[in-house]
Image 1 (cartoon, rainbow, N blue to C red):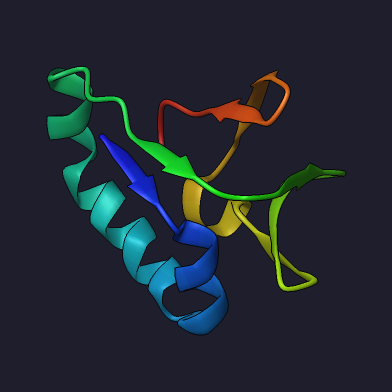
Image 2 (cartoon, rainbow, N blue to C red):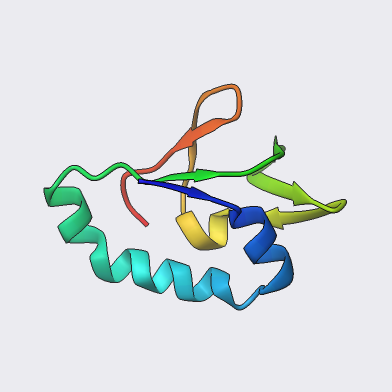
Amino acid sequence: MKFDGLDYVLYHYPSVGPELRKALQNAESSLFNCKAELIFAVDKLTYGERPKVVYKGREIELHSIFGMLVPEGPGHFYTERV
């Protein structure tokens, strides 16, 4: 499944981040068992110590939502567990 606009939502509604993490954690075993692949598309992604999306000049950390993200290629990160 592909979700567009995560950067927009996190910028305008910061409280969505913790709620998204809870939802992913609650659905983790179901998603893992059916081998679901979730793609969160954003316009700009940076990676220093941890990956962040950049929206309207503001950096938003992804670690608090997705946990440990592993770089797989330019602009592409992967995690199995939240």
